[in-house]
Length: 185
Image 1 (cartoon, rainbow, N blue to C red):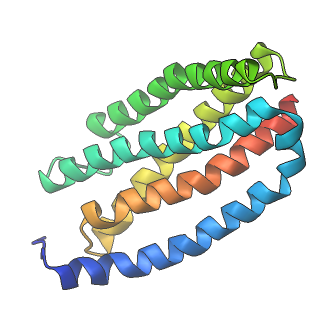
Image 2 (cartoon, rainbow, N blue to C red):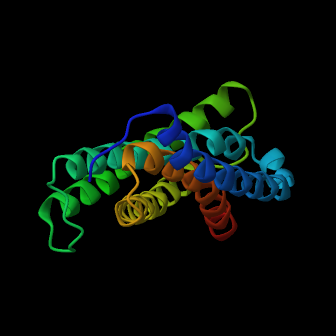
């Protein structure tokens, strides 16, 4: 598939996606607002929100960049038996299991320094790690689906996949974090 790299072509491919994702982000803000009381009660969770959704988006973006490069090189096969695809998915989830405990410890430590911890370190670590693992799996699914959809619709994945992954990860990040908080806290 030849790629047309003009401002018009990129705008035509990207603008509808960005407009739709703006509406999705508004939904995320509404969900976040509904958990305001919980966030103010547990300041370490308040610190955890932006870092969790940002880190999930970053993990998905790294995977999206790798899949987009593989796509352009003609090395991406959307088969479940594709070792490159499976390896990148496993690496993304494994990285989340390394990064999110550090994110949780950092959120707890920052809250402790500012005098606002009401949750035990173990609880914050459990929330961060569980949320991160779930988000990593969801980010992998969203990234693969978005890359495949770009391929099927003849779009350049470089133009659309990363915005889709980061925005959807923001929304899922808020939903997953608060679902885990409701179960754990």
